Amino acid sequence: MDIFAFPPLAALLNAAYGALAGLSDLLTPLAGASAAALAVVLVTLLVRALLIPVGISQARAEQTRTRLAPRLRELQRRHKKNPERLQKEMLELYRSENTSPFAGMLPVLAQAPVVGILYTLFLRPEIAGHPNELLTHDLFGAPLGTSLVSALFGGTATPATFVVFGALLAVMIAAAEVTRRVFRPVPVEGDDSPMNSPAMLRVASALHSLTAVFAAFVPLAAALYLTVTVVWTLVQRVILRRRYPLPVPAAVRV
Image 1 (cartoon, rainbow, N blue to C red):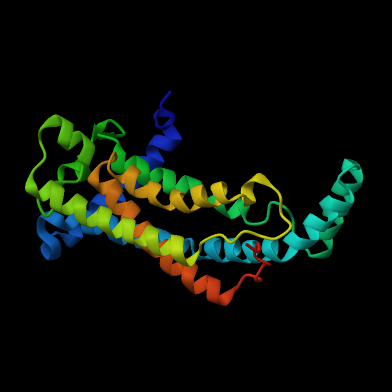
Image 2 (cartoon, rainbow, N blue to C red; image 1 turned 180 degrees about the horizontal axis):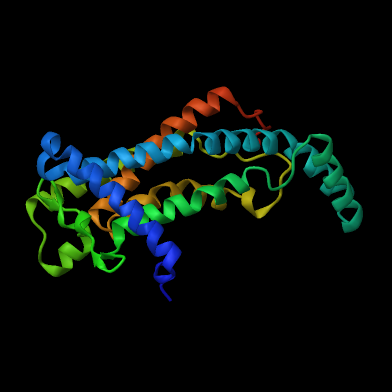
């Protein structure tokens, strides 16, 4: 079922497409054949800027969760045989801190429609019944509507395809490695949950590289969006972590 066949959503998607195509036309004298790619970058930067409050909300929620984690573990230890008492005590703790277990989740959900529309613009060959001309443009000779994997298996890969995708993937991998090193989860003493095990912490660190893998399967326009988003997210997290530092947990003693 195509949800964008629903008239209101089709109209919304078509309006977003018209705005992006119009921006591409305005940028043509400056960027030439790469105007659509530049439009993708600018729209992505605009969206990420509008979502800065979401990032701030998430940083605050993460700070609060980390600060409350030792007290929550203590409650779980004391009342593990009395689930009703445990739930009551946990809710009371959240209430006293003027927060909730779901703090930070609503902002994430709020950005989903925006991100969904952007991805749809970059992935669909047709928008509201007409060709998606955005995907007929290129970036330094690499078509915006072609993925690295499809170009390889379809025999249409060119040197430009490898150079452009190679550069984007290199940036994403570098950003993932910096993120892994800077925001590496630390084992917490006294936390026996599976999520605190060394294996799960290693898996969590490895997840940062999945975006680069995904980018090889989507059209270049979407990979460009992902690259800008990954770099923006890294810079934003570094800034917000300084503004909202996490309490240092007691690391597991080896």
